[in-house]
Image (tube, rainbow, N blue to C red):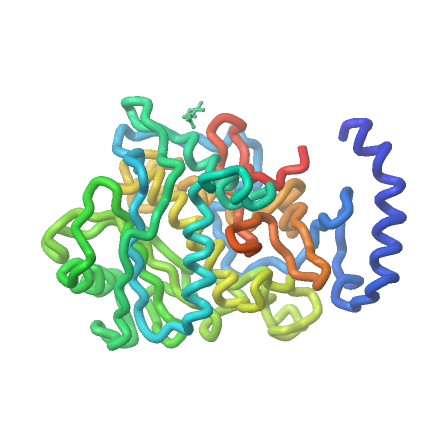
Length: 356
Ligand SMILES: *[C@@H]1O[C@H](CO)[C@@H](O)[C@H](O)[C@H]1NC(C)=O
């Protein structure tokens, strides 16, 4: 720890004491925290069930993230084709779209959200290049939306029928077949069950099979876990009930937009988009020898949201006046809590709210 941090630590302690006596929220007093800066806090939380075995908690020398010569999404802009599967409240759709539309840098400095921002978070993803040296695009747009409110493939999807959902979406105008810049993002509503959802994953990405869809298209799926397994997929906004805290127990973090299931999805969407952009056909950037189960730039940093994360700590994140946690700012004053991703230059997990 460098000396400036030590110099500032004493006044900080006073601020924290003042803060906690001013709004004596019992929630906040129960965190074990390592706090070094006002507004920042680093809660220690009960571990997420089924914590990813891929998660990196050792020396960075152990991580061999390698490039396997395949494409990355370097054409600009990246076109997201959004598929809303099931019934979605408009407010939740707006929230997710605000996150997606916060990824591109704003056109003017005035319109830019304050730092740390979602587009600064995406900067780490744009450090990845293909064999021609082209970087992942900084610019991401929503190119189309399809509403599958009739549950065309039923209320349970498998990894294969997810592809049927895409197939029926690309057959319907205005969706197009976009090999070059497209990501097909399927979001299932909280009443839809999906193979492996909750049991093993909160989202996944892959590419479509020509035999199913007619084309090879990169896609990602993320489920709304609000009702199914929030303590797994909406963690750390919901903490496992077996920890004795109850689903709305005192130790969970308060979601930035008041919707644990959807606020939790946003971090998973960030994770999957970062991986699709750097490994769209699962032959570009990943660690490990097994392309069937690659460890990608989001996997390496699951559960880390700030400096000093690991061992039960999620890292230094911010808290607003109402106690809601976030680590990045987005458009229209929105705030989000998004996991960090692996930075190939630093060879470490990184994000724009880093304190060092
Ligand atoms: C592209 O990626 C390289 C390698 O990580 C990085 O050094 C460079 O800054 C990136 N360029 C842009 C424009 O982001």
